[in-house]
Amino acid sequence: MIAQADAPSITRALFVDRLHAYYGAKHAVKEVTLRFEPRAVTAIIGPSGCGKSTLLRCLNRLHEVIAGARVEGKVLLDGENIYAAAADAVRIRRRVGMVFQRPNPFPTMSIQDNVTSGLRLTGRLRGAVQREVVETSLRAAALWDEVKDRLKAPATSLSGGQQQRLCIARALAVQPEVLLMDEPCSALDPIATLKVEELIAELRGHYTIVIVTHNMQQAARVSDNTAFMMIDMEDRTGILVEEGPTKVMFSKPKDKRTEDYVTGRFG
Image (cartoon, rainbow, N blue to C red; front, side, top):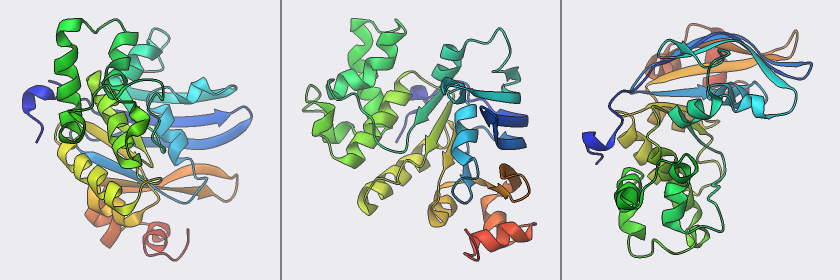
């Protein structure tokens, strides 16, 4: 279990306001307005190519790292537009952490150095607190008991599922307010997937979590709210069809297109 003292004291809501995302001239995501509730898990579902991962990367300004990519509209973190001219992108990415599709621990670093890498880069790590940060973050990622006797071992010595939880620990070490997960289980076996899902359930009361997943069963299991995206066939852009409580979205969605997707009629 995660002690309340180990979690951020404030967990922010995210609000996307009429967001458009582009890759050069390609219009990838069109006019999405969506609220992500604090201390809850929101799943973004939809067919391949509909802009789910693009939308996710817009939430912490990783989208703009790609050459030619740009965003129009607003992403508000506790009312602050993260795309405002005065906003610090590095600070935003500390506040809004990211876990990617495939485990990506730093291969030349030990387990403990992977955990503390973000703090070292920002100059926030001092020797006296390193041990505490490592243990707290690994416990939060449900990995401490499995690695506590080999913290100096290479991160690549871990299994795929353990590496993914190490990446989650690395993200948690900088105490983000929001945690983004882009298909975090797609490269994992069923046992490792179950452990990550159990971890998400543990974290949900302490963080605002947004997860992109193709797995309908996973979305139903782990999320409180679900947003469904699809491709607008007229201009091939990604659009938000509807969003709502997960139980409603999977039992009585308002839009026929959502019903067709969650029941497997298309997608």
